[in-house]
Length: 491
Ligand code: BG6
Image (cartoon, rainbow, N blue to C red; front, side, top):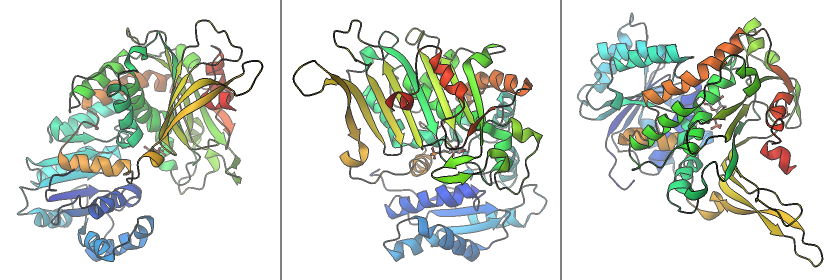
């Protein structure tokens, strides 16, 4: 990023909400501290909050400052001075806020203007119509949409139509923050900047792939959102399918805005649909019950403290999902891709495990197949598990040992948070790491039949105690074909 940053106006709708306070503002502060924001760049939060600029600056000072390194007070003050707050009524009946934002933006039509919608998806259409009505959409405007984009294919198409009626596709940035994680980008570099992997990156050499996003956190205070989402919509439709795409896609001809996304869409369109009776065979859903997590007794999903009480629908919500997916093309025929995500798991870990086939004929007892593990978090890195001989005389004894690349040990530079990277890409107008309309819709097209089968069943998700690795069904999903989840084998 050696180019001089251009002045921009970043307007965050939902600007006092959780995402903004926990992720966006810290990311923008880091960018400011690294000299990546032009002096004139402004951050304008819009919310129903009834705050003025000073109130908002005070709130950020109180709530964000403790979570970022403030080693130079002048930089922190400079950051606070960029902040503004406009109280807005999305229904458009109260015009005061719209008049204020119009006045703030007047005279700055040439600047990059980014509308970041950190709000529920049903507000995307109405918000876009309002900014259009207020005459605020300039040719240099972009809009950023937070996930989840809709709750099924039909609602995603509806939102895409609504936003598309105001903004051109090249102005729409659909965010999936997993794509901003360092290791995820490194996956592309590993695959396409090293020659040795490509010849073995196929069904001749690879037995199966596991993609896991396990979290120790539960959902306290999130019932309002999570009851309508569940793990499939919250994590699989976007984050896990994006990772699957990056593992499975063909080499793009260029690392540009369309080539990578074209290849990802082809993967999504090659996913074998899981429909009707197959849903029970190839998917597992679970819900955590009370248990011990991180040494502490925690409540089950239904008893999580929340201002919204649980309903009958809450009992049907999956906090864990596992799926055996298949990519039906020449490269991947017959290679299962196991996807898994869960709340209140025993550890926090997001990783991709590529398990190679065993040697065709083993002359040593105790050999095990090679495995490449790409760890997204915590401690980002890459490990290649090889078989080695244990030192010593007598019988040859084998031991799996890792060739290990730890990013923290190898690179000393600060690893930017995923949001920081993605926000800078939005400001630079680079959409490569954002989802295109056809990608989002192809992902929903594959997810929809699973959702509707789950929703039509009277069976509830399988319970699993908090602090355990999901329901028994998840183990059986792999055990049926003689396989096991990575950590089960390494125990
Ligand atoms: C979000 C989900 O998209 O990703 C959350 O809505 C989840 O439920 C989070 O906790 C996980 O992100 P990360 O970066 O902590 O793996």
